[in-house]
Length: 549
Image 1 (cartoon, one colour):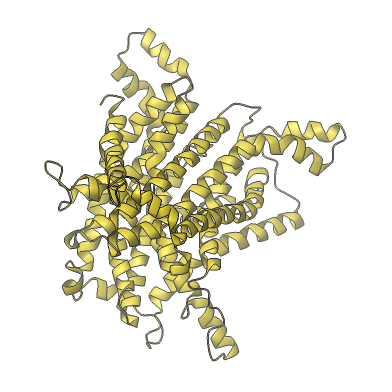
Image 2 (tube, one colour):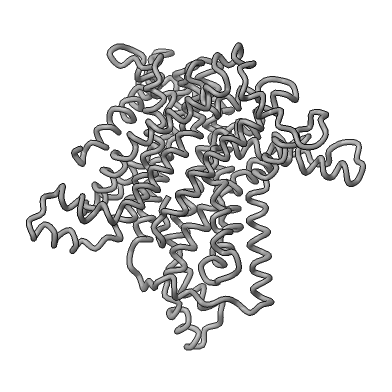
């Protein structure tokens, strides 16, 4: 595969649908091709949605940094009991599909959620004390929990490799602890903090599943508005214009992230992680362990509530019940879903496998392009290759719907369009996983092999592949997990016979009755188990010291 294949794939399956969106947004209406944009700017509601999306993403980023940076310090600079286990647990919510996390918050904080049920039972209350559904507070809380791992992992990995002698030298010269941190450590950490903030802002700016399920119409973001315009109101020109605005904004954020992330790879007085100070005195160590454990418990509590509610459903049955799991193994819902729940599970696994097979070579080739490129254009190309990750899945689905609706590229009735959309979202994860390993590789190894007469293929097979295979497996596992939980694009593109697990969960939630909620919780628990298993493989195989997502 030529190294330019990712750019061809991007041009055909991202830029071409983007052009279709652009063409639809310039559709003549009212005598001018810019009418949809004029309509957008003249409508206070959609201007308010754009402003709210910025506001909630900014607030989510600030809150996530405030919660995540102290934990990053603890993981970077101190050793304590169960450090590796706690570090693994905080990342589990991040790799969960958004619909899983959203339903986890329903199970925890909903009217019949675990917390309300506990308080009602303890204090004999007549009604649940917490009414957080369809509020800004639960959206922000979900975003903090969901993106907490980004701040902790990116910042702590970089922080743990900073040479502690720099700060120690400042202390010797008379600087106090806060002065040494502010004048020495913080400036060195700013690229990592900035990259984490840009990534958190990007994910919360394009948040769809969380906002759609937890927020009401008053808290609709750009993504939710695009979905409503395209799939419910059938106002495609206005939806396309809004999608163009979102893509332009996310590209700017991706450009900032690419520059900051590249800065974290510069070698500025780095030291091995073995230089991390030994464990703290017992009292301080227990306090630190208690604080980190509390943060980890809060982060994983929605998932714990989800498991509890799926095993102990509030349907009048006492004790443990597997009724939800038994129901999804039957075909009773076939008349509504067109496929049985087991078929939805099979569809998800099949699409995830095909997505992995496509994303792995594409992401690897893209990583080689960036690792070997030099010049000012490297950051813009990096941002362009990563743009599908920063583009709303709803926007991607809309682009595919508009771009591949005529022969010879009429893919709307096929499963191919789903796999292609999943691959666009998944291959950037392969790119980041492999790129971090390539940038850490000593280029003299490749040059020595070429000097000894090895062909490029032999260099890759004998020299590079043994060094990057962990990054390849991590990227492949990420691609599989991302595909199996993809929701936004599938919601627009999928036909009933290709229903996936996230869509089956969403359709369960759209039906009244406790039995539907019980089956949704059971299906979500299965999806969580599959995704978490993939994450455990990632943690096992991830090259130590890498901080890229």
